[in-house]
Length: 448
Image (cartoon, rainbow, N blue to C red; front, top):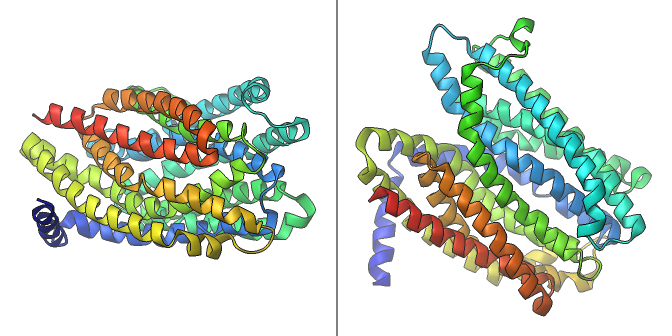
């Protein structure tokens, strides 16, 4: 049975490389890898320059909160803007510039309000949900204030990237994270002695601001879009209302899913000092294969699967999903096993220098191995989620996100009592597995 399954997967892989879908995925993934590879070095520099301290715990906790807010809005704006721009371009009576400008103004107003409310709530909730001591708690809130512009900037880069993708300019958005990373590393290096851990926050904000400027310049140069001042007049058009209505369930789903890293870091703060940093460093190592696996694929797959589904029906979508799952399972399993076997040397290579304590390396490696155990279900769950989104079944994604959030909290509490921060990593893996089973059953039930 296993041999037959591997043979079918290999045959699917050979056929896939002759398809337009895989060619687009390969091209976009290559550009994405080039864009992300520089960013992967930031945590390594931070580890070497700052080590594992209560101050780094405060930064990574606050950075996780900022990324949580970004994760609610940015993916929705980046992905949903593509079909809306395509629809607007097909309607000659309406200008894409007016729609995009109105969306930018509206989302900016929403994000400013969300940031303000979040900062007020954080002032009340941080003392209740964390176990940081007084100075560290104050530092965490100050860093959250310093990182708040990052949330707005990332929303803008999501809108700009989605618009460029709508005009089939995949390379620029994919490689743009390299701009942010280079600026961030330069700022952190230049200011680390003067500002301490605050230089990391300044570096991230400066890097994302540069990315916004670069994408804005490219948008005006490589697309026919030409904006006027009048386009940015505030307006709530029917299309804007439809955009918000279509994205609301997805936002709820992303909110629930995005809470998991925040919950993990919060519960890690209840453990001995340095636990939040260990969890963050291991997660950064885990993000490398998941980013290379999934980011380029997700940009392309939804468009191709949607075209096939609306032309040929559910049977074609079911075949597409099954083929992708077979290929993804083989590749994800291979990568996970190789990285597990090399986890010790790779962890030492990444963090074994500067201020990083020697005794902390085995802890990071152990947590990373437990996260890698969830690479396969994570990849497969993402593919099932793309199939579910093709059916526009965002309610199922919302239910799955809420289910995973509750399960993660429960498993964190049970496992961290026995395994410490490693228990939080194991909880994440088990949550990915349960989420994969849930999405698979719901998707195939709909397709039948």
